Image (cartoon, rainbow, N blue to C red; front, side, top):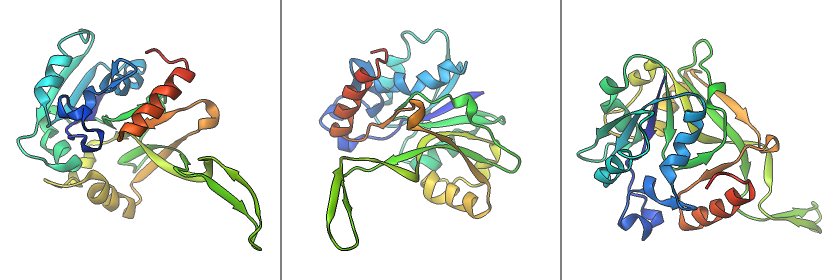
Amino acid sequence: MKAVLIVGGEGKRLRPLTDSVPKALVEINNRALIDYVIDPFKRAGVDSYVLLCGYKNEDLIRHFSFGYDWATIDFSMEDKPLGTGGSIKAAENMIGKEDFYLANGDIITNIDVSKLSNPKGSVVDLSVIEMKSPFGVVNAKPDGSVMGFSEKPVLDNVWTSMGFYRVTHELFDYLPDVGSIETVAFANLSRQSKITCKRFSRKDGIYWFPIDTIKAKEEAEAELISHNTDI
């Protein structure tokens, strides 16, 4: 199976870091973000990749000219922004007719992607994890008395998409020429009950870091060290 990675964004909220490099090449503990994204697929034996590129694509091509002899890397270039859905659709011939993995190019996680599947009727099987509150939570009684505080707790039974998916070729029937995969394709598929999910839990040692701001980058760097990951 191929892995298709969405790496065309400008990373505006990571400026000034992305003034000189594409978002996928921002360094996390002295290692390019895109290398972390590829790690789960490499562990699953995936050796064929399609990168959906846009901003500063020449830097990405240069990055993959070193150290990736074990993999086949193809690049689909956007002449103008197509959105996540449009960029996938434009690469249909390059991706081929088989099922494939799909991932946002700004996520660091240690999930086992081979656990994703497409049960009968499922076009998209998405990975989900318990939501972690971005804010502290006040534990209060109905009478207004405060019992305590929780600093950014993990919320029970509240799930968020991890940005890693396994999809079938039928996805292309739902993709816009220009637009978002989430608001267009996923919205239509969910109405037809053609999306399933695989739950991954932080209680099992799963971590998930979306690198979308400078603050998120700094927090991920600290937590990755605490997880004793390779850096």
